[in-house]
Image (cartoon, rainbow, N blue to C red; front, side):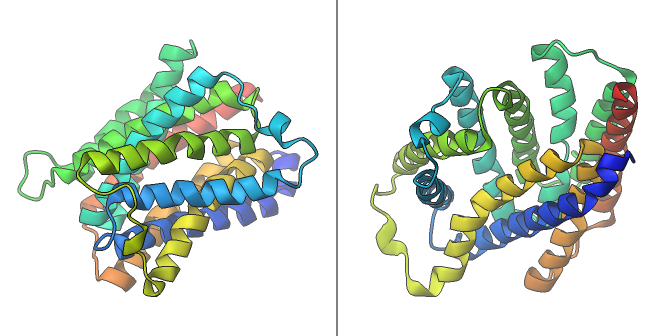
Length: 297
C-alpha cells in the first residue's frame, strides 16, 4: 500500500464504518416500515430527508446557487432515473429476501461498471476486467441457483438492481469531474422525489400519504431520512482519501455485517451458497482492482 494510502487509512476506515452502518440501518428501516408504507413512499421520504439536509447546508455556503447548479443535466437525468429503478428493486428485495442475499447479489455492480466503462467510456477490456465479469456472474449463479428448488424469483429483481447501480456508478464518472458531491446528491433527490410520488400514485396510493406516519415509527423514519444521505456521503469521502483497492475490501464487510444483523433481528440464517457466491464475486472484484491499480502505479 502506498505511503499516502497508509497515512489516510484511518480516515478511510472512519468513513467506511459510517457507510456500513448507514446501509445496514437503511435495510432495517425499510423492513420496519414495509407494513405501513409502500416502497415508493419509503424512498420518497428518503429523498425528502436528503433535500431538507442538503438545502439547510446550502444556506451556509457563500453562493449556494453556484454550488448546486448542475453541469451536464442530461447525464443527471439518466443517472437519477436508472438509480430510481435500482433503488426500488433493491428495496423490494430487502422486504422479501434474506438481507445477506440482497447485499451479496448487489456486489456484482462493480462487474457491471467494468463492462459499461468499456462500452460507454471507451475504456480497454483488460483481462482483470474480463475476470471480474466472469467471476461476478458465476458468483450470482451460485447465489441464485436458477432452476433449483431453492431459487427465488425475487432474487432477479436484486440482480437487475445491481445492473442499475452499475449504470449509476458509471454515469457518476461523467459527473464528478464537473459537479461537486453536494450537487450530485442534491439533484438526485430533487429528481427522484417526484418520480417516487408519481410511481406511488400509479399503484393507486394517494399523493398525501403522510397521515400514515405515527410517532412509534420515529426510529425507522429517522434511519431512512438521515442514513439515505449519510451512506452515499460516507462512501464518497472514503474514495476521496483512498483508492478502490483500499475502500472495496472494507465495503465488502457489508455482507457479513448484514448477515449478523439479519440473524439478530430476523433469525435469518443465510445458506452456504450465499457466502460461496459472494466470495467468488469479490475475488473477481479484487483481481480487477489490484491489477488495474498496479497498471496505474
